[in-house]
Image (tube, rainbow, N blue to C red):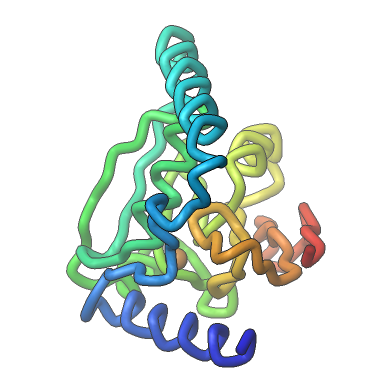
Length: 184
Ligand SMILES: [Cu+2]
């Protein structure tokens, strides 16, 4: 069953990358949640709302996100950034692989969307704290979570997760692991 889901996951995201459809059918709607869980969920939603309005009161960090028009997981990542103190300028691109090439994202590090912050790239489903950490790394041209790791921000799927790494691209063209996330 898990293998089937993984297969489905990759099929879905192949379409996400080619821009045919962005339907993220694997996100379970809240209506399926057990009734007893609804009140805690509402409280959680309320505190998330409070936290995001507090974040708005503070200085928001501007970031550009460039994505394919129909990419559902890209939008989920934008939501993750917005919930963590970023102000996202969302750009739809006709040709993401050309865009990545123009902004120095090597094909080996490629994912779906590409963020741009202070002249550096943020490729794929990189957690918000690693986007913040990038600002302190003058040796890096950008960071990436290559591919579409399940369980990374915007790629949540029924609690399943892949182990993945955030890779930094150094100015000399080599890669360095900046964060390691185990499967759980
Ligand atoms: Cu994605």
